Length: 369
Image (cartoon, rainbow, N blue to C red; front, side):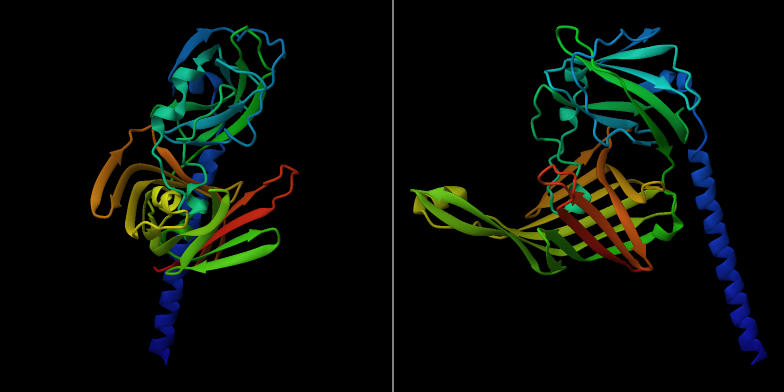
């Protein structure tokens, strides 16, 4: 009995020490992220495509046009930077960006940015929205109007974890300038939450819309109903995707891998219109793999994944893509709930713009180690 109790005591001590070390690492990462970064330090170490660095203050705004950035621009990542979604009530051609520290001092310089040259369209990777909890922000192939741009600001390797603020405004071809918007952001350390380290296997998704919840388990067909008109007749059909597996591994060093395999069955539009009845393509297998870095954003309880390597396999045909530092793609930036070995990634949407979320998409994964 004494030996058994001694073994239990040693095991408990090992677990306690291990947990203590993990907690210390997490606290250290959070503490690094609270260090204020000087405005000039940030200004001197950003890389902005289409941006010209100018000394002094930006031109005085006449506030004749609007600017809305919604919730964008609040998350920044090491060696990667941040993105700001810019929307105005007119066609805009440029933006002014100036950095500011936590005490209110602004940088000695600002950036005059050609938005067309900076546009993220060159980073489009056509990531399919197989899992909305992961792919909610990655499909950048959709063309935007001239009053909407995504401003990409990259960091060089001299930017450390910490906090800073910036002022951004936009201007049109006539020289009208919007009122600046101030945003404070945190440069996240990679990793940051030891409870997330391990391999997570997808088990199900829950979609709630208009008060109704639909659950689809792994290995089941997830189908969406659509309709098209052919010879004045409305045809109803379902496109279906079966998720055979989907897993991701978050490593202690801040790297991640992610892989999924789907079996897809979509409508053949040409044949359908020719016969005026729903005709489907043959099922095909789609496999995709990603590698990159992950970060846990403490304030938002959010998991962010930025990938730099992508492998796509469509019915055996392989396509590889690689992205350099500063050109990584945000695969996921979703709020999460962690309940023991169950990880829930959550996306919400306000479909009618009334300020109330009326659509919720949850993806559930179980930890295997």
